Length: 75
Image (tube, rainbow, N blue to C red; front, top):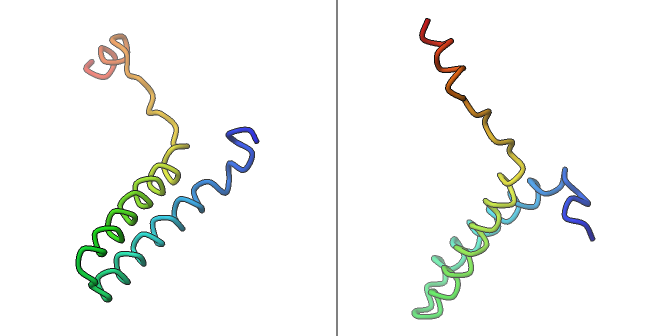
């Protein structure tokens, strides 16, 4: 499957992953099962980072401001 087979769904999947990470942290904090909580928090951190990348990876790069444009702004 090509990378951009579903470009409109990528941000939605990313947001779902971020909310899933928040839910995992909430459940892990509620259960508080000692050292096993580390697995829950670690899993939530990985899911949150991947979800954040999925959500914002398609943002366009800001336009570069070259030396000629800087001179025009100052006059």
